[in-house]
Length: 364
Image (cartoon, rainbow, N blue to C red):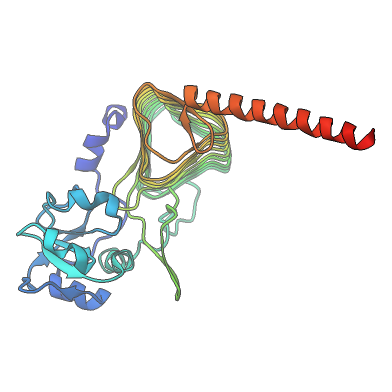
């Protein structure tokens, strides 16, 4: 059991996923269901079997483009079909059918519900009666403390401790010599060897995905997983959301402090360090050996390069090159940030001096 948890590729290739998939559906059926219009000359009978990110989709998949940041990936996609705005239709590859809509993200939500009708609710215990489901596989030498619950088809490796009150959901795999603390919950996740998950951690719940609009906010099903590689430690009260279409990944040896929020589709490299109350927004990438100080916030869809360091209480809104040290809100290279602080301090002292001089003049 333990060795299969070492990397992310083996999971992506072999694990069945957590939600039942319906279909296949024709492109015409999808267009009708989600309120999209087929591009001129499109093959309406083309069969689609799954929903995938634009960079990962193949000939049998449908994808979407809503964020202009990913427009460059449209020309090279291998997707069989793509939900997108009419303005991008001329950038579609020849073999990709366009489904045109003014609201691609809303259309994606409806497409996901079509293919994954059960994905609106988490899969946890599957209606079991006792604390350990009879289909769960608990290796010899694992310890399940009183009050812990192990769901259907879950696996727990030898030497692992599942503490009192912890919940291990349907189909979760946990490697060997790991520890899941009191009242922690692990669902929709694959967890490696020697991983430490402290009390109250929540892993695998929905990512924060809503297609917002004037008529309300439509929930976008989150069909991805959380992959936690070997020797990771996650502090008490932290939360790691599962991916939307792809996986949320925490790399080997990474250490996460208490009360940290990891959003959906975030990918954290090997041996990173995240201090308390850090928040990482969705689809952001941290490369190997990144260090982030306490109470930092990182915007979504950015990349923090290998070995970069972010000072405490910073707000990172743009990608950070490898090896650099940034700080401030918005964050910038430390040298620039320090100069700006020095200038503001000097300006403050000057204004203070002028104000005191004026006050003395008025009182004289």
